[in-house]
Image (cartoon, rainbow, N blue to C red; front, side):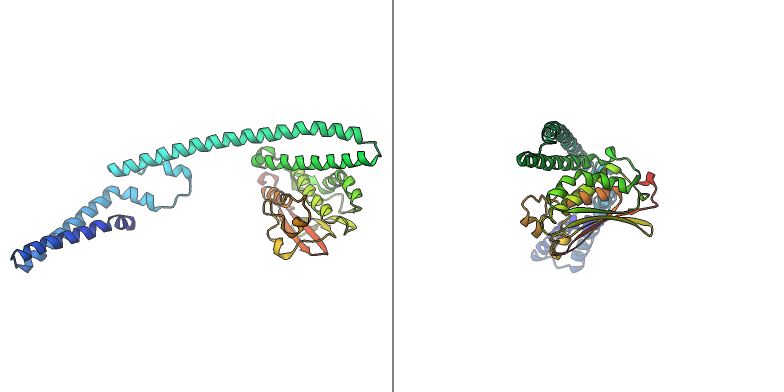
Length: 333
C-alpha cells in the first residue's frame, strides 16, 4: 500500500486541485450553494478512493513483489501473477533483463574458466625449464650457479602461488579431506625451504608430536604453511636466528604455530595484512612483497574451516597460528 501511495500521491493532489478549480469556476459564475459544492467535492473524492482501491486490488501482487527484498537472482524472473497490463509489462521487462544478465554471466564465467585454464597450463609449462635449471645447477658449487638456483627457487614458489590462487576459484573440485599427520606436512615444507633457511642464516625448529593428526586437506594446508614460512624467512633475514614451527592440542582444537624473530608487524597494519595486495609498512621495506601470501593463507583457511590468527610485536617477531577443530567430521568439511 505504501508503494501505491508513493506512486499516486501526485494524482491525489491534482484531483483535489481539479475539484477546487471546478468549484471556483461555479462560485465566480455566481453559483453560491455551498452544500452542493461540498457534495460535489465529496463525490469526487469517493470516486478517487474507489479508483485507488480498484487499482491496488488489481495490482496488489505486483506491489507486494516490488516491496519485498530480493535475496535470489532467480526470483527476479518469477512473474507476479497479476493480470493487469502494467504488471505484465513489468514482468516481461524483468524476465528479459534476467535473461540478459544470465547470458552475460555465462559469458563471463566461460572467459574466467578459459583464463584459469590458460594460467594453469602456462604454470605447468614454466615448471619444465625450471626443472632443467635445477638439474643443471644441482651439484654446482660456483657462486653464480648457486645464485641461479636460488632465483629459480623463487620463480618456482611464485608459480606455485599463482597456481594455487587460480585453483581457489574451483576449490571444491580440488579438495580431499583426511586425517593428516601434521609433522609430515611440516617436515616436507621445511625441506622445500631448506636452501632458503641456509642462505638467510636461519634455523628451523620443529616441535610437535609425531602422532599429531588434523582433519584437513594435505596439499592445501601445505600451501598455507609455505606462505607462512616464506613470510617468516623473508622478514627474519638478518635480524633473527630461528623460525619455530610448533603444534599442540588445546581443548577441542589443535594449534599450529609459526613463530619468527623478525621485524614484526606494526599494530596499525595487523588487522589489514590479510587483505589482497596489502603490504603495509613492513612490505614497503621489502620490495619483493606482493601482499598476497597472508591473504591466500586466510582464504584457504576459510575454505578449510580453520581459523588463522596473527600476533606480532615490532622488532620482536610474529606468531601466526592455525586452529584446527580436532573432532570435526570429514564429511562436514
